[in-house]
Length: 320
Image 1 (spheres, one colour):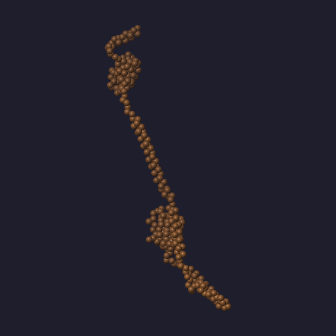
Image 2: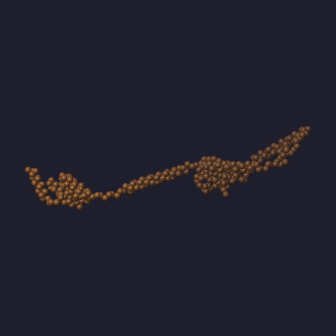
Image 3: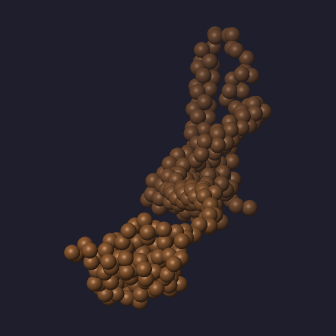
């Protein structure tokens, strides 16, 4: 009996359809909802949509929905809840909501690839710049330690070589001066000259006369020797002699030569030492660390302020 009633209702529905009228999404969904006895609010709650959107779908009004993709999704979910025939829904969707071909998106792969390459290049550039800056900082920090390791109180190899050449030239000049000095001729009144000028006595017959002459010669010789010793004991005062005084408050290499090329001081001296030497002026003085030296010449202080600290000082005493 029930099947007969359903068939009658179906025939009535078909008879009510206007000839040529096709089913729409809204009519299919609304009919299915009413058959299941579901209100619009209940359907909206199950679809997580606003009731007005569900009402627009049943009215085939899709203008309030942003995209056709959303429309197709809402319709399919609504049809799934109401168990509407999928083929009928797809046919209506194809007719009412055709798929819109999305415009082909412009490819930015080349631009993206170029940007990635530029980014890597910039990264490498920054890395190289950072390394160079780090090396510069390390070099700057190590520079004072390298300079401090140099001992300016000791002469360099060039300075030692120059000093040796200077000494060699001075020795050669001394040898030339010595070879050119005239040979002293003893006067006739010297004992040696008298002995050389007196003829040899060949006659030994007169013994007393010979002994007397011998005693006289011995007395003359002893007198000459005594005169020489007295001359040696007398202090020699040379007006060209001068004195140089050096006091040190730090380690310093010193080399001092006089006018004859004689080396008076040569070597490293320690702080606290006081040196006083004499020689023939002018003097050649080399100081490895002039800032550690207090210098006097003939008792008068000599200023070393013009010589920079940490540099070898060369000067001549007396100064011009």
